[in-house]
Image (cartoon, rainbow, N blue to C red; front, side, top):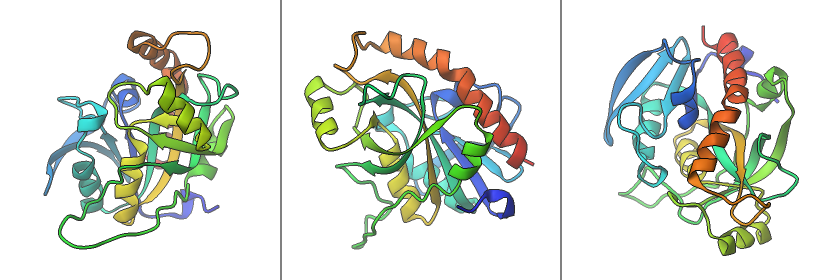
Length: 238
């Protein structure tokens, strides 16, 4: 697996709530990028570009995020590889909240595309080109080669939906990675997955799943995410 020390391309970090809560990017300057899908606000430092999938100024829920806009912005900036940081629910009892997971594949029943005016298609594949670097930098184990299930959101999944996703062999569930991976890969941008398990999916475990409880868990796991992103930025954000 090729590390990015030898790469000269620009890299992107795509995240959501973790960016808003993080101190890592607090002093980075904002920049506005004009795209066919609207003006996208990013932060940049050296060869690193940071995107908040929900938006920095006026956060949108997952089903309303401007995926095509910020992927178009990354392509305009010449980004060659993206690290997608995702908050997920665990579909497996052995994947406890607080676990770091990298997915090697994903399931999405509503594929996203940048192309509306002509026939197109491709076979998506997460190459996880940055995974070797993440494993080296992370003080905690990263569980690899799991399967991500994309749902639309913004609500959590029903217990019946969770059982179906388990039957399909999925390990974690979220609302964003499928759309992002589809568009990035279609645009020729390499994709690496890094997921933080913030909760068990609906019906798994004894604790009732609530939005308030989810936000508490996200806050508790923020230090872990910050630590890894901080070391990543220290190495590659020059």
